[in-house]
Length: 395
Image 1 (cartoon, rainbow, N blue to C red):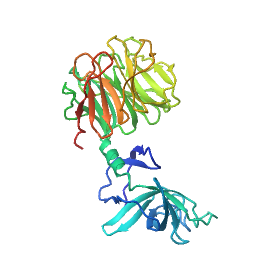
Image 2: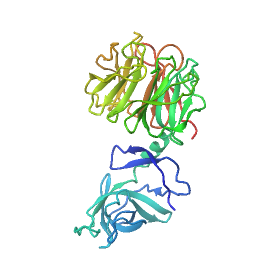
Image 3: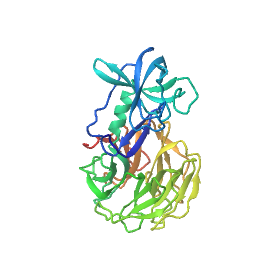
Image 4: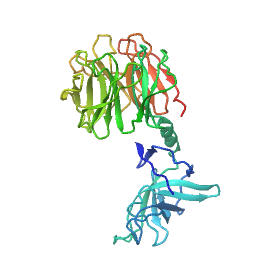
């Protein structure tokens, strides 16, 4: 019977050949294997179950198994060999689980990654050796990754018109966009649905008054490279959508704000090649990008806001090494050299800014990998106070 689902998020492990995939809907009725807490030993026999090529079929339509004997065990991988000449991993078996029978049931020991494919249809190779990524020591990463996924995307602004910066997040459970209203103290109230459609096709969100009507709007960067504009109605909803740009497939980070001081919201965008571009807002779209900097390939998060009290929109950026850096805006779409203001931000996965406590100073909001929301109150001089930490919403 199986379970068919879209994959809506991919999260690679930093330390090994392993990726977790989030499904659009839970696989109801499926009982997952327990992840083994101890590594396989040399000489152990593991069962690989996959849907790849066999000795006689190119594309089998049913799962099949192979018995694999463990050779060496490294810090991250298992070296395997077919238990018999008829046991092998073939093309299409990447991702196959390596399972061990125990007194307590079946446990996951590893994930198949590559093999010599001896004995597989169309292959002259005779060796049945293979490699698998160990999973016995990644239970912590798995748990952290699962807990972080309540929000697929996040942005922030005063979206309901009460003068306090709210949190907007695409929920990982149903891919709908929800408004989490600010309580004025750095916390957020019960979520309210913004629009009826799913937002799973978006990979970045930004908020600002892009249309010039005094109401914050939402800009979504779609997986196909198009920019979608959702005009806000000023009370927590949107009034439709339109495509206002294309060809953004190579843009990996976006920060919004009026960077040139013309009362129209602009975009700062980081290209995959590390170039920073300024896209001036026109009220109904954006002008062609102008290069505003280079060397941004080491930046993983950005947020635009007026952080220093000089009336010009700045950028805050988190580097790959976890340092937090302030790039003061010059008021023309360019910035001064970055100044480090903090460390330890490597566990933040999303970043944006808004005035959450209505004190006329831009604050930072960050989503931690553990699912917590951290609101850092701005002091108006480029620094921030102690964050208010909110646990992830009930899911």
